[in-house]
Amino acid sequence: MRVTQRQRNAARRGFTLVELLVVVAMVGVLAALGLVGYRKYMNAAGMGEPKAVMQSIRGAEESYKAEMLVYLDCSGTLDDWYPSADLGDSKHAWNAVHDDADEWRMLNVSTDGAVKFGYAVVAGVSNAFPTNTGTTYTWHGLPGSPLTDPQFAPNGPWYVIQAAGDRDGDGTLALLLTTSTMSGIYWENETE
Image (cartoon, rainbow, N blue to C red; front, side):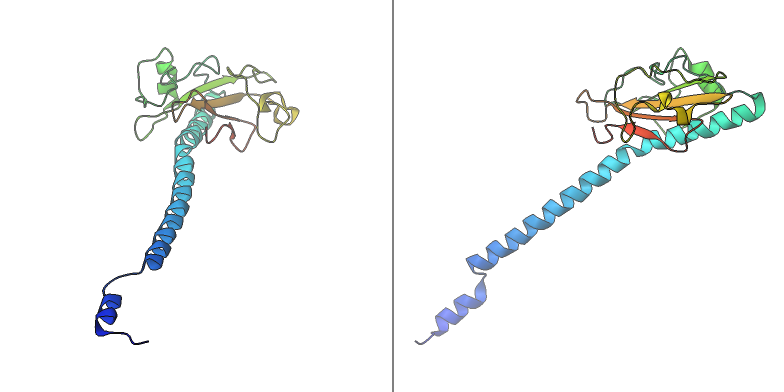
């Protein structure tokens, strides 16, 4: 069978349908992999704010205790959120008008800008944490709330820091908690 000049020129001009479908499939696979990585990155970035602010609050509490010998109780209860009780997906200025704003100013915590999460700090000097965290939820890897776990029981001055926020507006809160007796931060619904 003889191939004419015209057929050779046609073969040089474009892709075959099979080649085009292979390229489209490869681009689709790469896009799917990129989307999975992007979602993981966005979830990790969304939890960066409360973790950074909670570490800042932890440092401020330790500085306050070094001067005053007790930790500062900023919120009164663990469901009294600062800077706003609105835990939706909107941001709020850190130095907002709030009933507990004077205590938060005394703590001297600052942020880089507006925050999406609400924060609460309760402190005391007894040998027990408050057990009411303001919301009913379970903790990853623990049989109950860390506040009721004997291994975290305080011996002297203590504080509890809690953060909550609804990052995507679906009504499910991402919740974080740490205390003066814990080295880490516990969370619920990190990816909410």
